[in-house]
Length: 534
Image (cartoon, rainbow, N blue to C red; front, side):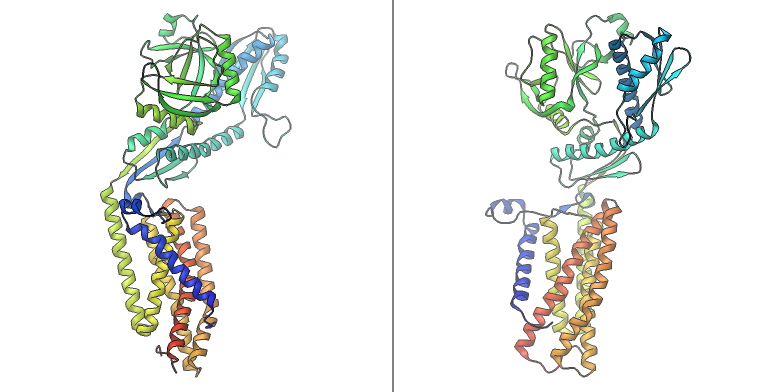
């Protein structure tokens, strides 16, 4: 164990260089880093919400709105399907979360049920022909359409997971580093954005559903009835934000939806100079948009965002290029925000803000100072203990290994862009104690061997070899506990677990290998007859 191998020396030297090189950017200002050569590391530790301030939001996914939207779409699908099959019907309505209707001719009821069963809904996974919608007879000519409850619950759970990913993409587009986005309970999401200086903008960008559709304007609608909120079958009255009219009647069926967008960016209109949003469809969306505009030249189509018409231009010619622009009362910033939302995708269901907290930068600075003080106290306490317990030489070597350990932890966290939180600092302090614990086991074993009459070199060798099993057992159990906390814990707990996991790996390396190399160099230089720790 005490053999001074070349690979051990190289490993220790490289580890020390790595620790210094990748920890150093955390001590330099951004201006200094920018002036350094390009090959020099620039990654710095990301500070969590509790250390640098930022915004905390608790959001709830409105799964009931998702169900209501699905109900409206199914009702329209029912209308279109039966009209396409030439089956007359009446009393088509939503009632108690289900859809009911009556066929005009009772003899057509069975045919209507069969065609609706074959077309409505989607096939359930793991079934043969089973769908997430049931269609059954009711009365002489009645039909009742209902959702399979388990399928709706699964869709709601999927909507929460999709919302988490979309929120993450939206925040990433804003340039916020290392946000914490986790699920809480059945339908809630916790969002923590460190360093976000404008929480209201963050809330607006996150909370906006950003569901974009292109729908034809119903030019034949009775505007007097529409003013009272009544629209013809197959149409709906939507508020308008184009500045020309307070509302517009549009067809419910969308020509194209925002799901078919491949890109969106903020730009300026070449003629008017106003801010616009440029967009591009995928191949399917481009084809549908081209066909729809070719068939409706001279008519208006509405660009609808979250149930509001933001623009309703007249189709002058077929738009076959698969791209276009959205104009409205945009500022460059609002146009950019809309482009961010469209690129990230629409939320499957609306979000409501249940809780909002803002952590000021001053509180974060206080937390950083408190963390620095507690870490410094912990380090000095460990230094004093080791020197008093094992003398200046062996205690000093342990402290050197401890310094290398701390450098490696900060270097690895900087390279991996891990987020350091206040619980993470607690994990760092615990890691320092665990690292010294390995040295204590080694040194105490050396003492026992010296007292048993072993020579200095054999006592040192036995100290490392016989203490190794205890060191490994202690650190394996610690890292298993850290992995469990990381897997099942929330943001602060995961920060603690991540720091602790890194610290366990580096502490084993430094407490064993770094200490061993330094002691071997000392022994080779002095050739002592006994060890100065008895």
